[in-house]
Image 1 (tube, rainbow, N blue to C red):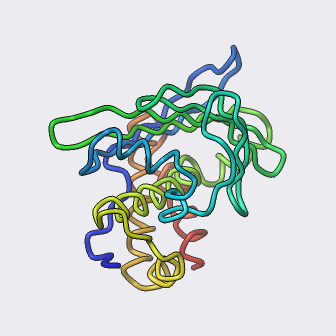
Image 2: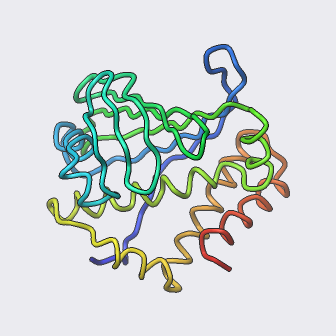
Length: 211
């Protein structure tokens, strides 16, 4: 795979919201992919195809269905309106958060908007105070990267070993740092003090690069 034009999300947003009447935070990323909305929906919801660009997933992407990502999160599909909307719980290490996917046709392709919502509970706030939105955002940037490479290649499999090896290169680490910094900038735009936001971004970059 050619990683020379690596891209995660194109647009990022961070905001305070309420979820079921409780204080929460939302981290949002979006990107236009060079495909149509039906193909994008299939790439996001067909377990066989998901495994070509993302860790393997078991389950059914239908309302009320259950899913499990190998070595990662699991949860329940709480909303499903093909090919435009998918909502699910994100359950990992005893914590529950929520992910929504919105797809929209555009002149030059199909836009995917992902929103990850987390309650402002004790565990989340402790993590946020260290890393800010990049802790979640960089991970989703990597997912958007894999999805984009899969779609741009006409549906080929993105080899996970190649991806991990690339992330250990100077170019891969530069991608991770840039992702963390851009989430820091989104954090500043949301009202966070610049020095604080970029310190969080630096910690996030160090975590992902292993430096």
